[in-house]
Amino acid sequence: MSPLHQRGHRVKRILVTGFEPFDNDTVNPSWEAARRVDGWRCDKHEVVARQLPCVFRAVRPFLAKLIKELSPDIVIALGLAGGRVDFSIERVAINVDDARIPDNADEQPIDQPGVAGGPAAYFSTLPIKAMLRRVRAAGIPASVSNSAGTFVCNHTFYVARHLAETGRHKFRTGFIHVPYLPEQAARHPGTPSMSVDTLVAALKIAIETTIRVERDELVVAGATH
Image 1 (cartoon, one colour):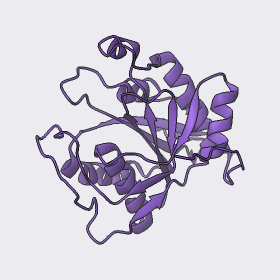
Image 2 (spheres, helix red, strand yellow):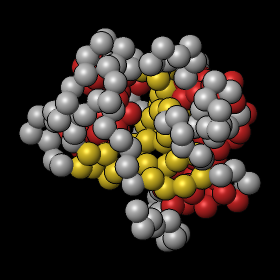
Image 3 (cartoon, one colour):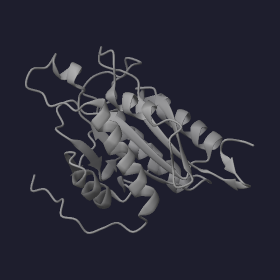
Image 4 (cartoon, helix red, strand yellow):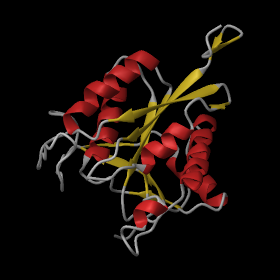
């Protein structure tokens, strides 16, 4: 019997992605967290983790292939945001690529649409406020972010939502930014960090919440700037 089937019923898939290292680094905490939940099961859902290239033009075909292959019910993408202080749950992706640095293919799009002709923005379809409350209740610093930036992370978030809206296969999807690992922060004195064990704990809570909560909660998480 396939590991993705139990007693004739398909085990639902959750695709969790993280990025390869970029900007001359040797590790990316988004992938370190993602790969540690590969194969984890929760409520008849099984997590499949895959590493994404940190390359603008590669993201869409790579994600489209994964979605066709896996038919996930949920897609949660993770990315590094060095300088963020917590487990940062993104609210919105915008249709702009404006790279501060080159990607891993040495390409640096400036003021280009992530998807030509696409809408200006997409909102997450994950229960972001419920995730926020539950991660914080576990004693882990977390926030809702209103900007996923304009680098490959935002591009991936936007593309995933676009694929969910326009493709045959429908799924819930969103994006979470994570801080540096301690060993990375040690090279950037004064920069916040979070251990991989804490990231994994928060990620599991986010996954559980997405499975169990369809209608999001009303939790204060607004920002004045």
